[in-house]
Image 1 (cartoon, rainbow, N blue to C red):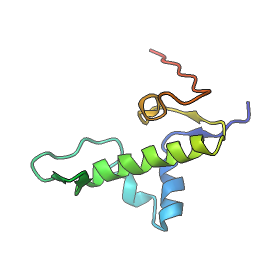
Image 2: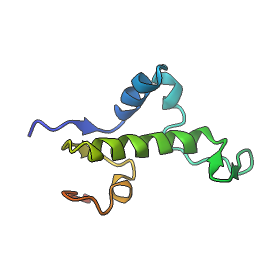
Image 3: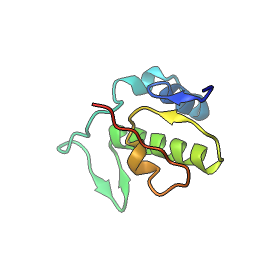
Image 4: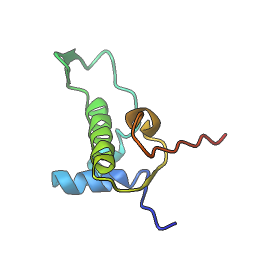
Length: 93
């Protein structure tokens, strides 16, 4: 269909935007935060895992806001893009 597919490659896109190496993100991608070593204060977190997830959510929202059509595999995209016009969600088991 010629649509861009976003999965793990979304890390490369975000790294390019942030001017960093995508390898910095690979070890913390899709991992839960360590609740003993991290904390949230007034909506801000010192958890690298949580901050990377938020960057991915913002990236997907920005793409959707631009009107671009794309396919996302995972990444909590159904929840992040919920309520957007044109959203088609498919769950495969």
